[in-house]
Amino acid sequence: MPPPALLDLSKLDLNRVEMTREQIYEVLPHRHEFMQLDGVIHLDADKLEIVAYRDVKPDEWWCKGHLPGRPLFPGVLMIETAAHIASVYFSRVLKEPGFLGFGGVDSFKFREAVIPPARLYILGRAVEVRRRRMVCDVQGFVNEAMVFEGRITGLPM
Image 1 (tube, rainbow, N blue to C red):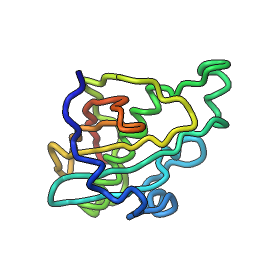
Image 2: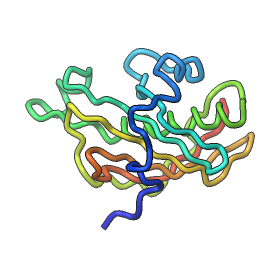
Image 3: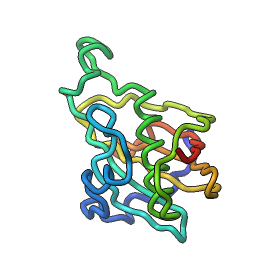
Image 4: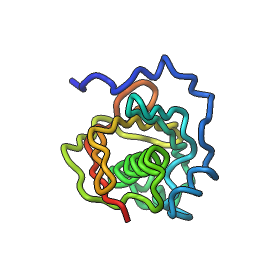
């Protein structure tokens, strides 16, 4: 049985965009296939929360090979997507230049397959926020089902 959601998506306006894709990638250096976020819909520094989304499309570069005839969004890209929200939170809240690089990935569990087309909501709650390190609990949801959960540790680059 999955744990409780980090926050209740039904209490958020999922159509409200706080940061567009363009604004996200003013903060993050990733480009092309590694631009994993399409929008941030909630960022609350006081509650240590962030919610973003990624539209998983059937014509993405990985669909042809993972898996032919039945594309599944790769777990490693779910982890990368979760790391992007931690980095956005870090940059926006601490107003630090640069981005977070991977410091660790802990207790990740994949609970459901993400099959395109799908909108993946990524929830994050900061557990530790320091100038030299950030730890963030993360969860992913598609159609109200938790598809992953875990913890990301990021180090400023």
